[in-house]
Image (cartoon, rainbow, N blue to C red):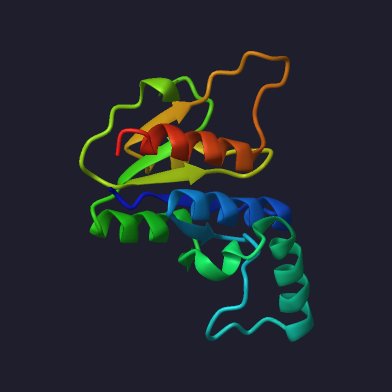
Length: 165
């Protein structure tokens, strides 16, 4: 089974980050926290202790302990993250509504692990960020809303990409 991962770019909500940890646990996937994402405590963390405690408490509300078991990484920006992922043979797949996106349900697996890039809660990923990716997929919407919550997208995408492993 391939070791896929999620890449969260500038996700601000601690509850969404907690949900991403829990989803990664369910699929045995790593999690990359890029940019301003709230992060649990880490070696060399120079944030004030009371801020770290609050962030960890908020993340744990939805992660339910997965923040302690899921292997996670951090990067200052998406360029840095993708460079490291490519060094390990990852196929870089963005999930974003875009004129170039394909239907996620038509995703074709190959032998490479997949890094699923998830953008900001409201703005999503920029064109520059999308251009860093190998492919762009979107989840078809059938209701009145234009998008799913980022944590729901993560679950759908990991399921769809992992189902043929």
